[in-house]
Amino acid sequence: MSAKTDKRPDQPGRGALERAAALSSNSVEALPEGGLARQLDREAPLRIKLGIDPTAPDIHLGHTVVLNKLAQFQDAGHQVMLIIGDYTARVGDPSGRSDQRPMLTPDQIDANAATFQEQAFKILDRSRTEVRFNSEWLRMEAEELFSLMAKATIARLLERDDFQKRIEAEKPISALELLYPLLQGYDSVAIDAEVELGGTDQKFNLLFGRDVQAAYDRPQQTVMTMPILPGIDGVRRMSKSLGNYVGVTDPPEEMFGKLMRVPDTSLNEYWQLLLGEDPPAGESPSEAKRELGRRLVARFHDEEAAAGAEEQFNRLFVRHEAPAEIDDFELIADGEVHLPAALAEIFGISRSEARRVLTQGGVKRDGEVLPPEPLDYPVSELDGSVLQLGKRRFGRLRIKA
RNA sequence: GGGGGAGUGCCCGAGUGGUUAAAGGGGACCGGCUGUAAACCGGUUGGCUCCGCCUACGUAGGUUCGAAUCCUACCUCCCCCA
Image (tube, rainbow, N blue to C red; front, top):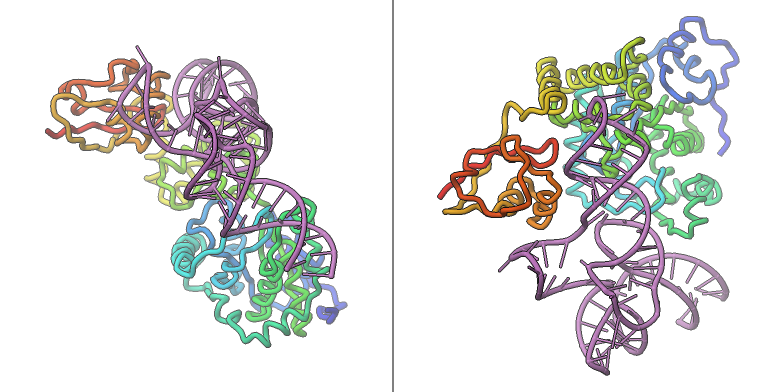
């Protein structure tokens, strides 16, 4: 793999350099050095690729870092291409993985792809985005696949950290996983990508795409990597499976609440990567977080929702009051209500767990802590009252005979 | 094809015949502190008709007064040799 492209000794103009710098904001790397400026010098819209694997149905804020960058290119007049990896999702990208990924069924993949797109267009302009499914070209003849495979060596494919670590840990690597970068690289060939975006964890795959393009005698893409947003635990990358994510479809109150829980140490990153600026100088971390929450809720919902979410937050956690609206839960009982059963029903926990929390003083009725005893209450005492589990879970009990 | 090793609770990981519902850690949950931050402290973390009972250590059988721990078969995974 050694085809040469980009043989342009001429220097890009000042305008191109400036545009390249602007488009590189927040990015970690854009390779090769100066490549983007040379491409921009041509004055023609570039073909910008982002590949996504529909392995999880929901987009979270972590995904939006790259999507925002894509939107930036789009606004600058470039052609944005969203590649849905419906085919590669079956293979499972090994990037950043210490274990194999479970394979998804075609149905799951289709469903995820649909919701993923829906959410991506909260950020991208649908009318100016070209969406392609890579099954379109990857569902190829075995001969073609073999010729693709012939373009890479095992040694090269094994170079990556993920694999090295797994080999050391004696963890399995499937032959299919080994193929992944090849397939992703072929996507670039198929759509003539000129720039490919991805998280820093994608660096190997993105660069490998250049090799694949070269092997097919195509111009090589520039690759731009974006930082990985930490999760709301501030430690590990934001990921749904780690449970530390903020989904773009989270209800306003939840989104705001989660953002308030982000550790201060991650505040700068959140501001930079999600809002593209530094937190306001002189503000307290908590106020900076509120502003972050307001803006993001407004972005994914609207201003009104943002105001409502903040009010809800103040009510619950600053003033320690019950929320304005509490869901009703109907329960059928006559004479007496078994409290653990009612709590289990309302909050989706087991009766044993309800008892435990009760013992620890974590249950309130209309704002008053309920004692561990008694466990049974006359219907008249509980009907219509608000039960609270911990700090943030509420439910109004409606008892039917 | 042959040889070796492993499957434990949400996760990791101890435990190799009996006070073991199973050490320890992580996570989660409740409480305290607070800016619902982090850090920290205390508690909890199989289920239930809860001072007792039931179900649990890959699956199915077996040995034993008694097994996660021993035996048999099966399933799954890993490593090595060919």
